[in-house]
Image (cartoon, rainbow, N blue to C red; front, top):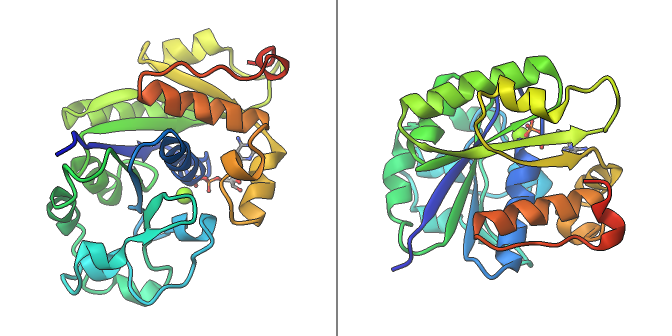
Length: 250
Ligand SMILES: Nc1ncnc2c1ncn2[C@@H]1O[C@H](COP(=O)(O)OP(=O)(O)O)[C@@H](O)[C@H]1O
Ligand SMILES: [Mg+2]
């Protein structure tokens, strides 16, 4: 039996990079030799499967949450070795879904994997809290702008209410412009909860998505890839050193 860490990836706002981070952190953890599963917990607007290049599949998490199939029936292994459970992109599949079955199904996987990362729904609604409830820990994602940061703080409060361990925040799509909020200010707005990493805005992430690959594989030497690998290393208590010609930027 291994000690499985179940981590939900959450945010106050949508479009800040939750799915990108779930997929890439999962891939980087797999590359570091950790048995990792990523799950699409965004049941109403799922897109993890799209990021991974498997948008259409006969059965998905939705069927598990209807009690129709076993969780192992919907688990795919990507060429990288990363395991993935996609959700259905067909709106009709939402009928009859009981999201509360997520927790009980995940219990089956505990002890068999090192990491389970769940891509959550943005905000504080039921969909987001059910994912949080199914996890032991959480990582928050925000961009550098104030509305996104203040909304993330609300999500962090919910994590605390649910008595889950808040690992820290990833500030994504940072452009290092003068108009951006400074790191110290972001930190104080987030009430000094840990900031795991600032991930730069990097076109490579968009190219990778267009190619249905994680950026850590599509452009492993990009600035975003080094940042993401450094977060994965932190999760397993390792130090990651980006090459010197990338380090000045961070
Ligand atoms: N660091 C980054 N640099 C550039 N583009 C990014 C970065 N992170 C995410 N993106 C892009 O932003 C968009 C939204 O990301 P996504 O992961 O789908 O957000 P969410 O899941 O929070 O809605 C995608 O087109 C993605 O490629
Ligand atoms: Mg998403």
